[in-house]
Image (tube, rainbow, N blue to C red; front, top):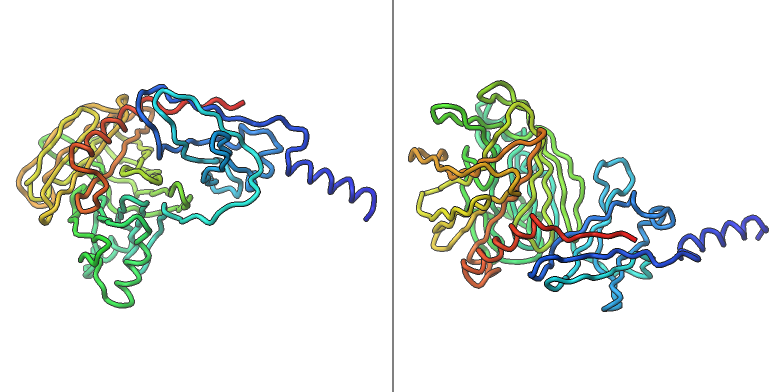
Length: 388
């Protein structure tokens, strides 16, 4: 081996093991008197020193108190081929601080891709997503085209569908495959859950609408473009674009960035929207057999659902909250409870999710409500991150 090659090899080795570099720490602070877990901490790779960012695929998050590495995930948010975020989920006691270290992780255990999403061309371009708690889908351009061409099997709707899971492991691919290859319907429960939630042309479980005058409601059609940005053990992230749609004051331009994280019953929806300064997210009242729990920026609809209980929720940070209202003309797919939202600088954020009693994820509905109350507080008071 030549002298120059030896020097290059030593330099590379030094880089990989952070030769002569001080420990790089991340200090987290929980200012709330509640336990925090399944909250995702995002570290911008651009904020890290070069010896870490250049070898980010080898970097782990080390917990010195347990002498173990946390599960992590890298995300290329802008899809330029370079990773932008390192994410992990710490477990923090009430009113506590904790320090983690970024350093080379010697080995990594295999992880399950609990947080998953994809387009489903075999099912007229559904886009479907899930984690270990919940699953959803919405409808794409092929489903819209069938309706516009006068053919069967399509739907025009930007509503959100709930898939009710009893199990923590992934079911999307399994259910679609069983339906296609064996004719096993996922609209029936075969032990893992089912899709028996009706969306139709309603807002379903969190779709958007703009209210005009005289009880007019304007909605988009199906999404026209999708981008799957990330799947993994901790987060699935994707983008949905919509064709410009008619609002009460002109055309509206809409794009959604949706993320669903491990251990969470609610997904986060970040909306970029032009053409309106207000919008509403709706929950279908279905058979109007439920109870609406009005908690200001937290909206819960608890209903009887085929001899079970389904509790849908919409939550928004306080700065986007405007009001709540009910529109119930007793017409199929038009009966909703709405969380009214402010559009700030052509954007807004809201959260959508549900709890199904058959999943046994909570002891009872009061425990679910406590989870939601705590979540609302945590969203307003995120874990503080200090990078050293």
